[in-house]
Image (cartoon, rainbow, N blue to C red; front, side):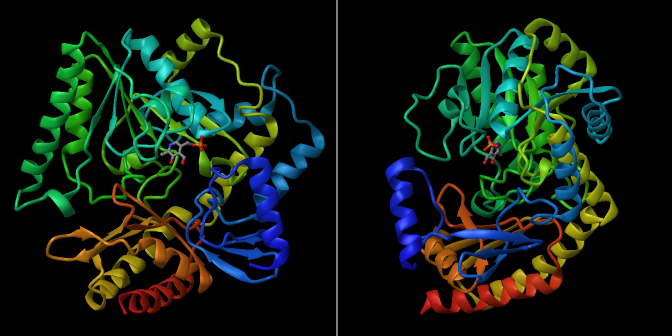
Length: 429
Ligand SMILES: Cc1ncc(COP(=O)(O)O)c(C=O)c1O
């Protein structure tokens, strides 16, 4: 770090507090982005393999132009008629499996999930929530209280229960997919029974269908469908948090729940939706949206404003025009194959996860015991020094997490793979 960046860091601590997170031991001071690349204040470029918010690439000209044009014309709340808002709502809801869908717009993933929980409680008359044992769905009072992925000061609430998500790498123990799914479904059954025993009526299952924060574990066929049936039988509804996994990231469908073959009752979105311009949504059947809107008079000052929806529509244009879902499938397959090649050379790689434009490498200290490697942080920092940005996640903080923008290419993947090859070699020494 140079003196200017050190001084900026000190000023930041003094005004934002020391707990406001920053990536990397030596934080990066970024000033510009283009496609899959970002540039620091000294002009050094980094390959961004981590940030999923610039979904169609940093500063994509089509999104910049659409949002700028609208910003120069009018930006106002959604209590007025505006073509952008209605056009985008129609286009977005048409990507779902609902025959007639409706949508509320928000500004963040947190707002989307919080609103989805309010709707679930309203629809079911229950309060109970089931979430994964390593979850992050946002920073509101309710979502923070059920969060287990990060330390929070809130007490875990009586109305929530946690279930482990399937992790075949760690828990298969010779079991077939069906046995493994049943093993985890038994746990969910017990969680629902425990709520009922405490007199708590189930309102919702809140899950990311790709289990991104959990480390993108291999999918166990039958698990999600079984879970959905079980929750509905207990009177609850299913909220699919597509904040990370939506908008084509799986490379197979617009939504991760479609890839996994389930139809949730509510879909929540955020991060990638406006390519960095804040916009999120809660999508459900028209009847649910209409009824809740009339009961709760839901209104969100900034949510889905004409600029945000212009950005959102431009993101959909780029996904379609540049064939980005197919690109995610193609580049993802390429990366998966080569990451398996890396695994053959590096003992530290215990498991490779690739699903479209989302890649994970679980690092272990010992392949036989699967003891988590403590070196993931070192790898992430060393990769940054080599000009490649990624991060780590998972219950043991040992899974390298990579979610580049959907415009990521095989040539850029080669840069990532070469840097990983070198770095893993170095940390092993
Ligand atoms: C799966 C998931 N849901 C919700 C959120 C919250 O989104 P936001 O930070 O926009 O409130 C996040 C943020 O990391 C997330 O990963």
